[in-house]
Length: 330
Image (cartoon, rainbow, N blue to C red; front, top):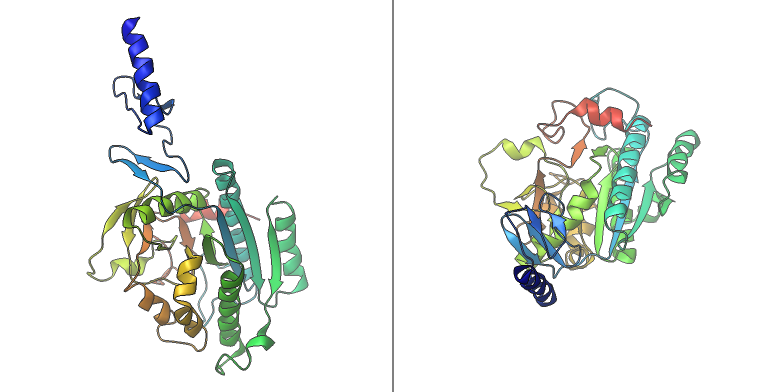
C-alpha cells in the first residue's frame, strides 16, 4: 500500500512538472493514462515518439487552409499521354476531392480544435462537372467553397503562352497563391486535382510539421508524395522522424505542397515569378527556395500522383494503386 501511495504521488508530481513516465513493465504511460501502442503525442503541446522521447511543440497549428486547383477536362496538361486507369479527367478530379475530404474529416476527429477551410479554384469546368463536384461538397460537412478562375485578371501579368491550357494553368496557380497570401493563417496546402490521398494524410502532415519544425526551429515546406524521380540520381538526403513515419529532405517539388503563411510572404517573389511564364523546369523558382529552407517528403507516400505509369513525377513506389483508386470511387 505504501509503495502504491508513493507511486501515485510520483505520477502526480511528474504530471505537474510536465514530465511523462514510461512503465515498460506493463507497456503503459501512467502520466498519459495510455498504452504505449496508442498515440502519445498531444497536438500543439508535445510530440512523443518511442524510443526517441519528447519534443516540445513551439511551431503550433491552429488553422489549415487548403487550396484545391481543378481542371476537369484537360487529360494531362502539356502532354498527349494517358493517366493510370485511362479514365476521363473528371473522374480523377472527383476521386481526388473525395480522398481529400476523407483525409480532412479524419484529421478533424483527431484535432477538433484546428480550423479547416478549403477553397476550390476551378478552371472553366462544364456545368455537369461542377454539379458533380458540388454534390461531393454538399455531403462533406466541411467548409468548402468554389472560386472560378479569373483568366482575364492576369492577361497583362502572365506572358503570352503557346496555348490557352498553359496560360490557364499559370493563372490558376497565381490565383491560388494570391488566395493563400490574402486569406491564409497558419498552414496552407496547395493541392492539384490529380492526387489521391490516404486517409491519415492531413493528420500526419500537421503532426509531423509541428514536430519537425519545432526541432529545426524553422517553418518548413512539406510535399505529401514520394515521387519516383527522387530515386533516379545519387543525391544525399537527411532522414527525419515525423509523427508516424519517416520523412526525407528534398530539393524539388511539383505544385502540390504544404507550407506556412510566413514562408509564402517571405518568398512571395519566387511564388509570383513561378506563374509569369512557362519556366524550365516549371517549378524553377520554387526549387530555389529549397536551397535555403527545409523541404521534406514522406517515406512511404501519403499521396499518389496519378499520371502516366512511366512518368518520373508520378506513381510513388510500394503503393497499392488499385486499392486506393477503388476506395475513392465517386
